[in-house]
Image 1 (tube, helix red, strand yellow):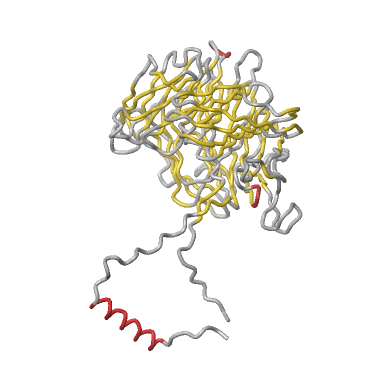
Image 2 (cartoon, one colour):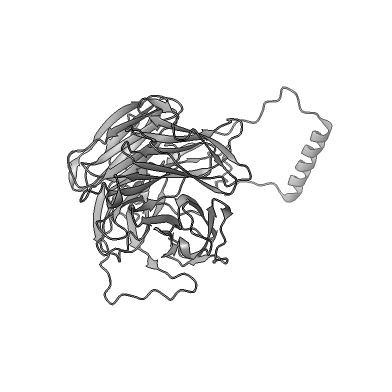
Length: 524
């Protein structure tokens, strides 16, 4: 029998009585305040999505995918094994899985539909199914017909799931080492340090993971402000498809060395990444920068950088005056080449930072010249290594957010991998974990102290007996904000090929509010 309920008439009478009493009686001053709501609980995410753009159009490209989910840790800080998911183990009805699938290539409005090749390209053995946290899975896909990938992870494989895409192009106009951490879908992306210069071929890759179509807008901002674009109705991105857009085809304005690209969606969501190829300097991916902020950190500038160019943009109504500093292993210094940068509102500013590192690695820190007037900006640096001509190589480092809890870069090698961890404001303790390799090895863990205002630059820890690529995870244990980047070097034929990936907090846990009062009605 259900609980007795008040009739509508009785309820109205009670409400009238309460209302009358409230009107005639003032509340007592000592009346207790309402009880505070219980604190929100941090719970692991249950599903995560990632998108990887088509890696290259070069027939000699060699791409490695590495997929990884870091293990959860118990109260003592020890890693916990397990696969789980709502249905339990790998064989359960709702078993945890992390799967990537090819996305179709679509055409831009006005372009001919993409013709299907006579022979279907061999699809990569995608690092498709990671079955256990803490163990990376790697796969290779070669050639210029490798598709973009979309995918999702659920259950115990969702918290912190990451996929790294690493491509070597040994020759041709797109030669270089191209590295990218595949990104989550979103509706807003910033890409400072893009270009439509004659020697550059910059493509924005838009990938739609969803069952319904998306419509994206691309805005271009040069040193003189907004560039006129040819596409005014938005760029349609069909469901489960990818669209590569060559920047130089979007505008009739003169070529620009420094551009800021802003990608937004009118409907739906996409993954966005910018591939930049320079005829002289090689190629790499330019990941999206962190959201506009008054302070910007760009970690992991190599010690032997021969050229560093800073590109910044202020999207608001106010100009930005920025103080430029380099956070090094010995402290924070002001570069001799530029101690400040003025960025006009709505205009892209590019500055060469000659002799920035002077043989010492570091992280570039941009702060408001007047702390009372922080103006949000986005920024990235173009870094060149090598002395001259075809023996040079380029990489890009975008402004990145702090690691609040944990962050991972999945593809690392036993040689040529370096790690930079910076604490610009106050000291911090971090834990660095090198996972097992995709083909074997034993994880190793190292705790590192980062002093305030310094960058710790080190050879990355290597798992014992490692075989195959492995993952690096950085966890902030205590102290102030920390920022990190991984540099991977794979030199070939005298070319110092390299790529830099920043660590982005994996947001593996979310705050879930707890109810102040349980209003559930139960049956007797």
